[in-house]
Image (cartoon, rainbow, N blue to C red):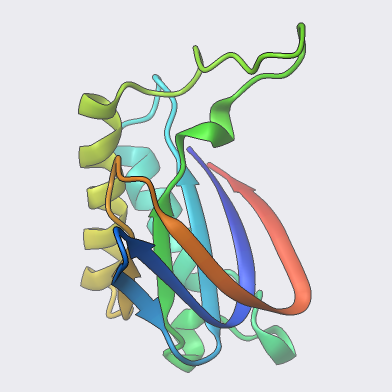
Length: 141
């Protein structure tokens, strides 16, 4: 499981002209990708890492500040561009495997007390964000 984590001052996800998820204060925008070998342990580990990673200002985390997270599924994080000009998606988990794991990360974050907004799995989404820094990390578990 991997995520691109960006510190933002605000972020939102729109589907068909309707905002489906947003954070309106400093927090983290998380683009989350799932691969074939991911399972329940990666869900727990990723939720812990996202909640506790010290990526906010003054080396704080969402766990210590209560800052929100906007989690957006992103199968393209497992795209490979090593050969040719067309990305290969063979390392990305199929939707029927990925969706429950993405939902699991969101649920595990909420169980930890995190405030979490989400995108819409499988939808064509417009993601808007205002980067803070900019500060962006690749997180893998």
